[in-house]
Image 1 (spheres, one colour):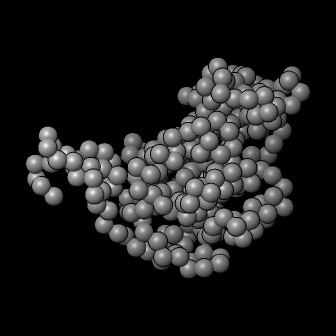
Image 2 (cartoon, one colour):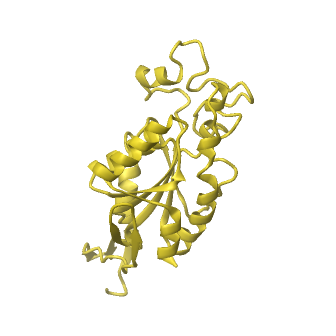
Image 3 (spheres, one colour):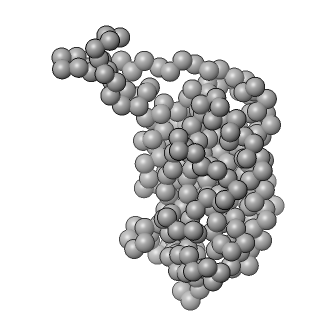
Length: 255
């Protein structure tokens, strides 16, 4: 590339430009190939094209003072991904895999949230619903920049990580997630977080529909739903939408 040209954009989706030239060839990032076993096939993938999506590991879903706990749900299952994520996140950052935190964080005015979504969180209209103060600390339920929508303290977010607010089960609807992944050149997505059968599954399905390659990290994912929901999620991912493995397999591959 001509040394006088300046990069414009995020590699690999970047041009090289000056006053007379725009090089739009978009040279790819150097490949970083690894082999990872899954429950159905052995995968060969490129870490340079891979991102990890960590979905909804936030106080309202995982903390004993959060929204789920306030309505009587046992949140201990939702906390089980914390320990394996504490190990795999630093390892993935070391090999320059993008970490993307996809958190439910609503607008304070809820103007983009329909009645059907609000009904899920307050079916009688009399309880603590979206934007209402939590009984334990008054934080507004799932509101952007609130304690309720924040990632649990046990998981460290780094400045180089990417944060995306979502407003419904899928992280792709009404968000910039797809545009961000395309700019980063990602085609393979690792999935972690809660709840496996709800927000994780909805986001993974939409990723599959958008032609991303999807890999669910089983030990980094959990649900507070009954066991049959968890088993159905694993079955459907393997049958229709991608692959299932665990963080141990990923750690072994990147070493």
